[in-house]
Image (cartoon, rainbow over all chains, first blue to last red):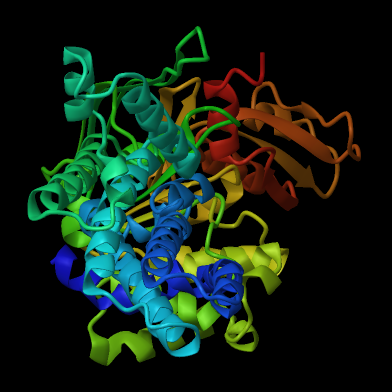
Length: 232
Length: 306
């Protein structure tokens, strides 16, 4: 059965998704940590509220970058480089193979950002908050789902994801949801990426963000089912 | 059994105004237990056809089935031993590591995995390269690795696209033995190749395709006794009996006086003519096909003689 064989391949998928990308991730972490490290050393030190805001902002940036690093090319790389030909000539379903890769990337992103919070808490200031991780999970599902869906149709998945986020943010700013019907419609149909900037997500907001991500993931799976990887 | 019924594949892209028909009205039956060759000039549609057989592409017309299933359903259920024309494997993997991964995906039982990997490494002469990274391999060694991963799974469907691409003469020769060893009841083997000699030595039948259409199916070996071919006949001394045995035979312009070109004949006619010459006391030095039967069929099918 295809699912069983793909599950046995899980360890290698973890290695492929994280191996060469982890170094890039840690370099970015170091670049993000340094300003905060020096801010903490300032005299007088920032207030706890300011520090909490800085940590949250830094975490969201880090989580966003981690998602891009871990997800980009999740399907497109195999398609453009032709690696899929040997994978999918085996008794392997592309849905299981790439679906598993998405789940692994979300998990990898959470482990990576949790590791960052743990190290940062020990080395700089206490920063561990579960709510940060739940925000990170929602962000991972949303942005990851967006890249996954785009990756099934284009090699430039992360570039189109950034364009989609910029467009969504610009349209929301131009047409606020509390001022016009168009704003309300746009707020309903655009990906809710703005919510991940908030310090705390309510359960409803979390479900909205995660639901969008899972919906985009499902669209990606549908594309994989309907459109063979050999098609241009 | 592989069945293709009026299959067509047209490529359309946003940027390309005119659609490109890679395969057209293609109908073919490939029997289980058969080694079927596919020959054709560059751009004839061989690789598109193979992608259709593996479900990497969907036909835009007609239908493809393998044992009654759509190609993708068949491959996802049972797998295929497949070698692509261009071997693409992530460059950081090691040779042995790549084979272990492919064995896992091919559902090789864990107890057999190491043995199977060792066997194909040995069979394809990759022992000294087993710990090398893919990016360190030469083109020929990479091709051998591609072939090794195709043989790992011992599938009932084997599809090889230009299997000797990049091979040196020694490994081209060895491939013929490997190719012949693939034949077994219950297994269907499809080999696409530019190398007609290779197909003639390995395949049972060869489909010649050109401009996306199946032009002709050439029978190979014992099945081909009825097909016509030209021969170069060398005798010990010039003799008018040659023209009597083979009407239309003439001295070869590019050879010695004792060399004759025999016009296209089938095997029974050739043998009868040779017997007549021997009975007439003519000493036969050599009889060599001017072109292989497959090459003759190929040139006729693709219009290369015109």
